[in-house]
Amino acid sequence: MTGITVDRVWKEYGDQIVLENLSFEIAPRAFVALVGASGCGKTTFLRMLLGQEVPSRGRILLDGVPLPPEPGPDRGVVFQRYSVFPHLTVLGNVLLGPELRANRLTGRSFGAARRVLVEQAMQMLAEVGLAGAEAKYPAQLSGGMQQRLALAQALMMRPRVLLLDEPFGALDPGIRAEIHALMKRLWHEVPMTVVMVTHDLREAFGLASRVIAFERPRDRPEERQRYGATLTKDIAIWPPRVAGGQTMYDTDTLARQDDLTFARAAAGTTR
Amino acid sequence: MRAINIRPSRGAALMLGCLPFALLILAYLVGSALRLADNPADKLLPSLTTLATSIDMLAFSVDRRTGDVLLWADTLASLSRLGLALAISTALALVIGMAAALLPIMRALLSPFVDFVSMVPPLALLPVLFIVMGLGEVSKVALIVIGIAPILIRDLTLTATALPREIIVKAETLSASTWLIGLRVVLPQVLPRLIDSLRLQLGPAFLFLIAAEAISADAGLGYRIFLVRRYLSMDVIFPYVAWITLLAVLMDIGLSLIRRRLFPWAEGAR
Image 1 (cartoon, each protein chain N blue to C red):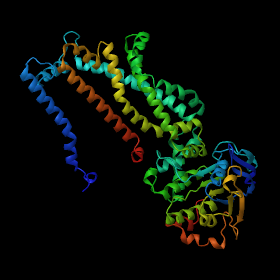
Image 2 (cartoon, chains in turn green, orange; image 1 turned 90 degrees about the vertical axis):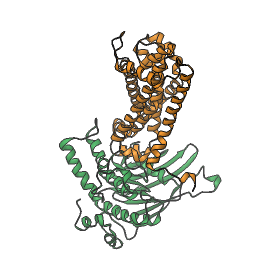
Image 3 (cartoon, rainbow over the protein chains, first blue to last red; image 1 turned 180 degrees about the horizontal axis):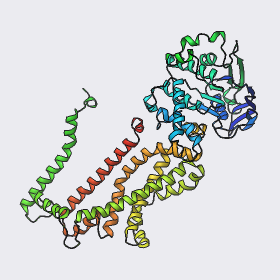
Image 4 (spheres, rainbow over the protein chains, first blue to last red; image 1 turned 60 degrees about the vertical axis):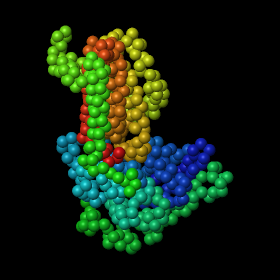
């Protein structure tokens, strides 16, 4: 298992060079935070990992295999907005992925098959602290609850890579702290690599195992067109955070755990 | 207090809503009384008694020539034309609109053509339809379909393409195929708008129906109005117009109820 390999990747839109010559590796089970100024191409890079965009040059490998040029179920995603489906209930949102995977014609499960999926979905909802909200529509949820739902929905597919595009940027500080604790716990428990774009350095250093910064080395107005951003800083968090383990600095996460998930986390988790 | 901050109570709002109707009826009664006092044979604004007699004759007595109750026979003829046309238009909108919304290739193929066809004035095509398809039901239904289907198709395509891209990408990461994205993600989100769009097209649909019936039919609401207009039979025309309006209003309310019942989640979004 080799994680993600980024091999001499360029991204250009016409004459505009956005990203130039990115080459790095992401270890399996890493939690990478991508930071940088607005317009430095971090979201563009995430979209390339997602398959929503294709590199102009170079290639991206996932476990040694080139990424297909479209999104797929091995890479889950949570956007800042529009991550959940407004026309489905909370339960419907979480069920959707497994239902679609199992029923290629109707996209719906019935009877016993559905009951099994509903049970898994309810477990997942409890895991992210949404137990009791199954019948609500996303519009009836707060922003933090919607992002929890988006996480649950993505994790139902057991993705190898979870991509987060400023997922907590629009949340209040209190809510954000709660969902950070949840995110940390999910990373420890679920066997996945996480890549998160954020403009919040505290969030980046608080959650990630590695922080990568994109910057434009040449940023004079006349240079902006022809020179893109590239990787300028690559910081491994010390002491190292390891998925499934805890560093001495993480011991306070349990105390700050939001009460919805506290009991479960303290008693040992379902996974 | 500013005028924009003065809100009527529920009762007052109801009264205000009824006021224009009451004024219209009052104006009619006054106008009718004045004209009849001037000339008892006046046909333009018949008295309530004359209207009641006509309504009784149209809606509750069997016509001696045809053996039918005229109003019901006309309503049945018109509504079956309208219903068929609305059903065909909706089906066309779903098939063509969804194909154009989901598949860039189909969009490239269909959108310019649909945009072009939607600009053809349907009534200008009416003679062509009658000549090509004959004077029967087909040409009348075709006129309504040509009139409203392109608008429904365009509206559905616009609504579907205006959905955030994130929604589609998210569905792809949940293993959805193109078909499943259409079926379970895009379609349910455009149906409420399709119903609204259909409500807005009820007016034009009735317009085209009556235009077609006026020219050639042997039954129908529009046919009756244009038949009796030669005799200045306002006592028939006024009840028919009121009845057509009532039918349209009821269909509008019905569609609105269906929308609210089937898509409760869409209420908050509006």
